[in-house]
Image (cartoon, rainbow, N blue to C red):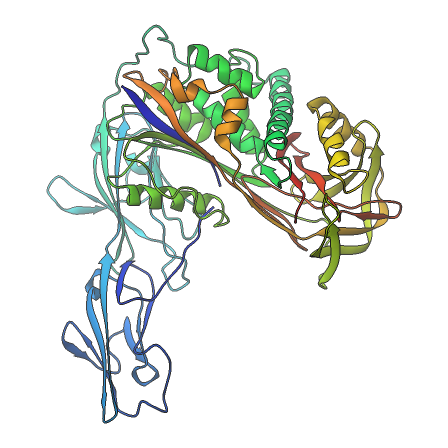
Length: 593
């Protein structure tokens, strides 16, 4: 039997609140229940009465339940389990009767179940709702064998020195390192007022002996961690992989916008490489353009992530089916190199969908709020990687709104909002090898946005530039641009918002990774049965505004052009590049803004 796995290259999450007669909410949120659809004070003259489960509510019902505007609204904050039930608004007067009922179901907290091996690191999630009325710190408890609850706080005892709390105000999750069997049990995260945020059942098991058939070795350790040549290998491989991806995308999408994060996709494939063996390992290495058995790849990806930390946030995650026993070495290396703590999938598709999309939203600052619509019950494994970038222009553009005409490849003109600066200090040059005017825009965080402007708006000129975009030409262009002294130029760039989901099945096929869908050898990850790739997703978001460039899992840019003017009001190619790490972060194309 072949088990299915899903690998997602990540990136954002949307939340909508709708008022209806039946509501299911979680603890800690705020609710406002209107008595009638529209405010009609001139028609309503009789007193408005509210009841809860048949009991009359007074004007000042309680600290958390309040009647507003003479009964027009009922406000509940923060919602707790005690607020579950039926609320009825009633108006009786001579010419009109109004009755409106709400049935409220309260989910007390999120429930998680975590299986871990002794000596590993576990993550206990607890997210406080985004409200300044919530206390800054949640409280943690652990249930003892006797059914009692004990305080679970950082530094509470000697062994709790292994506890680390996340630094973010609304992320009260904790990490426990080097877990032992005594760490098994039920953990609770609560508000000081006793409202549960999350309940986590932790089971710590003894390590399972490593076994992988004829491939009975773990991933080879990196023996020379200070090697600059290995670091250069990864940089060159990322540049080659980026141009390879872009080439495949432009061939399959000849007339569409493109946005992709080579860094996100390569990091996910590298993560998968930890468990790949035999032909599958060699296929992934070839796709990534790295040497065979490049044992230091994971160490240098971790080092790259740390180097990019000031300008770019990158996170990995693993979700797996409860029936799968992940390899201990894969689990440990995932935590060591990718900070990805394997998390068990839940019972239903809805629960898994919410869990995954919540993680994506959290890691992309809510720019990508929905990556998956459902999770199949046959899914055995899901790998995710999220990349989020937000950079500001070192010199701001004019904040006054302006419109110009953007010329599309067929000559049609479309009116667009633009970014404008009368005298922007811009490094630009005509690159004769690429047949394009190239401009470099400096961003905060030692990052640059490169815009490659073809000779004209035509598709033929754009394709000429794209055909010459090799990794060698790209690296030479970046080296040359760093030597050019900026000059004052009039700059006009279109304001852009791109939200792109490329065909990842096509990309995997072009990369030579079809075996992942058919006969993958991932025995270093799971040795009991074959895993086959079921689905691959990548979603990118990019915004180009007066403040700067904001991108998630993919990034976009703005450009300029000509004489003392650089006007990107025609199709162009863009590249977001880390000057500090000397690697590409995002690459794309704008044909229709």
